[in-house]
Length: 368
Image (cartoon, rainbow, N blue to C red; front, top):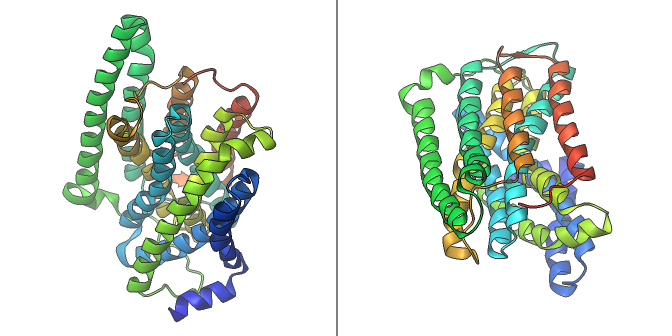
């Protein structure tokens, strides 16, 4: 506990933790102040993300970057899952699908590109395990194909009406089960049967900071993840009304804002790892998180919609979202093909993301 208190005193960013109780108090006393809730929840998620980053780095110092990247991606995606579940219960399927697609694209392009850029600004070139990157990119491509089928082929071959909707629902359930199975087999392949291919290529240069004891790190991970989930509930309740105040469209909010806020914790860890020349950790978090959302979170949301949603949700996304996810996957495959990176590679990847963000801000999709 002394290490945690010392870190809070040393890091001014963590002083923003005061926003955590304030956001809950404001939500209780002024439930209609959506813009205030939005700003306070943003202020609360930032220091929580920093704590999560430090705790995860302490764990990965004991487990290695491959397992650490998976751990961070899993914990980070709990936030996206909580945000999506809150929208799912409310029947806001456009927000659910936009946040899922946005999280995939943000992790694949923004997190990966920013990691390459930040790491490249400090180190001339960086290396990472391209076998692991290829596996994650392959899983992403598989998930994109699964999302493309109900979004394109259903409308082309099944037409419109009740029959087409029923076919889309059945297809979505079947595809969801296949994707979850593929994700489980991918984990078995990388962590069990062929784990010798997924070692760390870069071991980092260190920064003089002592890692926390493993007990403190795991306890901090658990507690901070719970607080991130609770703050995310307030965030998702306020984001739509606050978006109107700031002139943002619903599609931009779901695809860009919710995705970036939901991934703040894992982004902090990825950026920190890149600066410390631990690019295996950064690439593992970015691509691992994106593939986890595409292969696990999205299918689970489809299945849970039959239990907690007002109506079943399908895997049918609007065409623009599918195109962006496909382009993001291909971009990640090209950028990680060599196993080496420099700062300009990050710029190129980030430019693709900025093109998407600008397009959605000016021309949102008409329907889900």
